[in-house]
Amino acid sequence: MGAQQPGSSPDLDHRFGELYGELRAAAARYLRSERDGHTLRPTALVHEAYLRLSDHRARWESHEQFLAAAASAMRRILVDHARRRGAARRGHGMRPLTLTVSSGPVSAPLEVDVLALNQALIALASEDERSARVVELRFFGGLTADEAASVLGVSPASVRRDWTFAKAWLLGRLEPVGRDADGNS
Image (cartoon, rainbow, N blue to C red; front, top):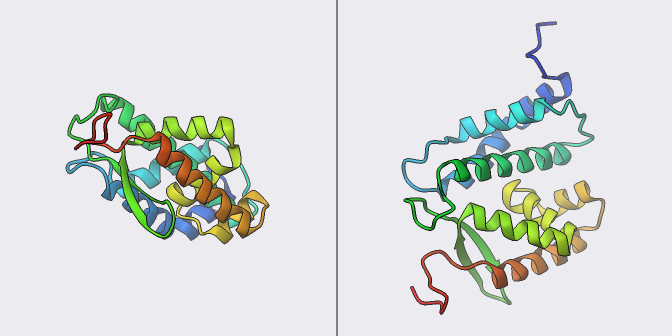
């Protein structure tokens, strides 16, 4: 058996290797909505998530649990990166993330900056922790309703209800980027 990296574990190495393609695809989705010239690349985001996960020495019961942990790590990396880049001020050359929300039969993309979304998710978690976790799993992790249900130990129908509630809740609290307080562009 070869030498392990400091902090790595056989479980992490196995899961990471097995799901690398899915993680890289999720990272590419996030970064597609960022500004041109963004300094993070999908591969770098995935590798940074690996490093953060290696600090925890956890064992994951399923690939969904691993994807959930990776989604959480990538969310924290994106938020940390946005903070470092001075994204607290509107504009600053950053393109916002696009969160598709639906209020009824029509889905509409809502562009929000990653820091505003993070703050909204923190507020949502204080009101409804599971709904906030569903957003993290579905939006940041790319998990399906069935996969998120497996991670959370609830039914897929519960996840779909939480997802619908969370999208409506976020829509009511997030200001679309590029609009003033009156909703004008």
